[in-house]
Length: 206
Image (tube, rainbow, N blue to C red; front, side):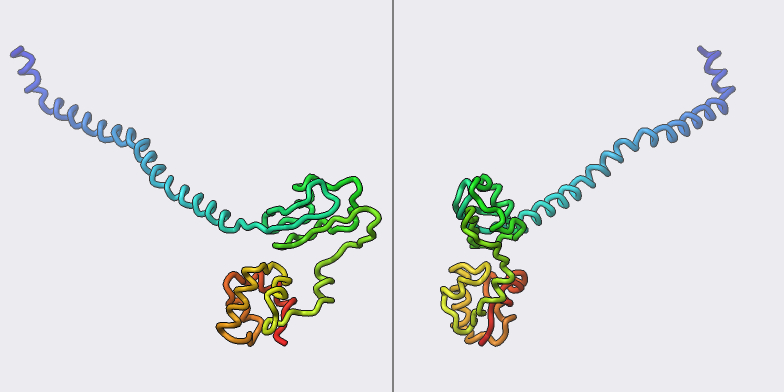
């Protein structure tokens, strides 16, 4: 035992060098074991950002989702009132109603036409001799509705205007006086830019 202690004292420098080498080796090896934990922490921090983005996208799609109410009549399997997503075509409505009857005159209707809220869609039977009605042409031949003198019933005849919206127009006119410009119609509750673009071709001030 004493001989071993004497040898250690004699080789003190060697022992110190070995200790230093061990410390340096550990300082190199230990950091190599750490990246897995750091990576996990980074991934954890990034996860909420992805979730927030997804939530925003879902909320946006829900906000954009709207429906129109359509009264379908004539030679279809199931007549009735249908709720359809905004932007749907008559073809979508016919499919939802079960399709045409065998007696339907498919040439009497424009399947590519977009649906409008409170619209009546009529599918003629063969032999009725009803030609396709193009909404744009029909509007051009109709007399425009005077915003300053129109009744509740006349206002309800406008595209996308139901009883409540028509009453809102009358209430606005009663509170603020006669309309001085067509653009003023956008001040009425529920009438935005898109609806105004449809209405401006159907209304007038005199």
